Amino acid sequence: GESVGLHLPTLSVQEGDNSIINCAYSNSASDYFIWYKQESGKGPQFIIDIRSNMDKRQGQRVTVLLNKTVKHLSLQIAATQPGDSAVYFCAEEHNKLIFGAGTRLAVHP
Amino acid sequence: GAGVSQSPRYKVAKRGQDVALRCDPISGHVSLFWYQQALGQGPEFLTYFQNEAQLDKSGLPSDRFFAERPEGSVSTLKIQRTQQEDSAVYLCASSSDSLKEAFFGQGTRLTVV
Image (tube, rainbow over all chains, first blue to last red; front, top):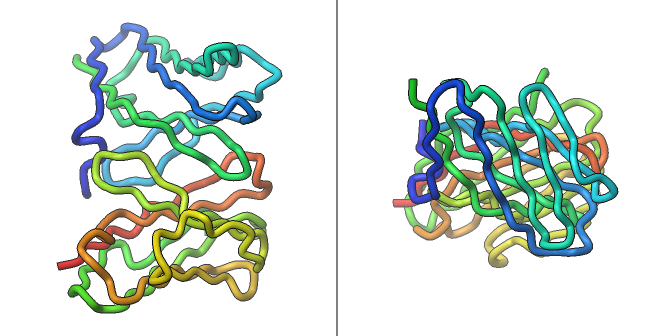
């Protein structure tokens, strides 16, 4: 399939380490945020979401942090695995999903 | 079906040709979105339907782009007189509620030559 994220910033981590991917969003009125994972040749896949009335939400191995003051989101992946290698996008919901610039996560054994 | 289905998976069009891209959303999903994703970039919003009503088409880049969802389920994105800059992956997503997570299809990779 086609490659995603050829020119995107890359975060390289060792298998088993924790990963932190950051994202800045644009609209202070946005009230819902989502992190997506996109593997090559596939559509974006939902990972975790958070509403603006929260500052932290945890899932399985993933945590999303929201700092509304500086309009910043982060995705933390615990014990990163090779299967986590992909491009990660944050998206803000303001009547429609607006995607941020992605980050490629490369996990090395 | 279990997920959002898009067809064709790949499409090569000669410049000037018209193309039609199909999206079958998850059954019962009210909201349907089309996005355009250029290589190395994030998806860019094109248009949004709630049932058969096209509520937002602000992202359509020109009047050569047209989308429809006549019965509130299957949607078609049509591009007339394709140009090289139209080359991209076209993604469709559906959700049960515009405020809830949207599920994406695998996309249609359009290459205009």
